[in-house]
Length: 134
Ligand code: TYD
Image 1 (tube, protein in one colour):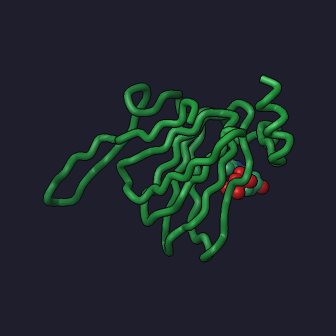
Image 2 (image 1 turned 45 degrees about the vertical axis):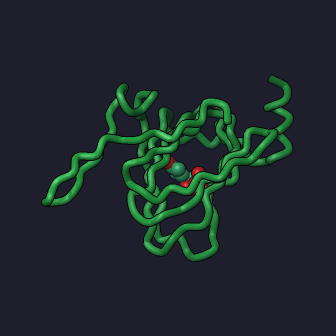
């Protein structure tokens, strides 16, 4: 899928416990402007269901697991994230939904933009029209 990338993050293995990190520009392909996290998701719920016009993001399963379902206007691809040392890079103009959250899962999302409701495309038909207009 166009420009979507699964990033393997550094892993410092240690008997005292493991450590992973990301920093720009080595691991994250943009300057981080915002960080948020999704937690306490009740069984069966889903988040997202939108695309961003401009925003780029990286999604990490810090704890537990969940699926990131991406659609590029033509095809869909499902990524299961269940390790804290992988980040899924999702560029702008990709429709994304997150579902299948395990109990106590924690999704960390870093993005290159501050929150801006105007940047969201929340209607899938509108998304497809915008996508095919390009
Ligand atoms: P939204 O992005 O729609 O959640 P999701 O895509 O995960 O389903 O955000 C839900 C609400 O939280 C919405 O009212 C806007 C608010 N919000 C912020 O105020 N700041 C943020 O950084 C984010 C991500 C959301």
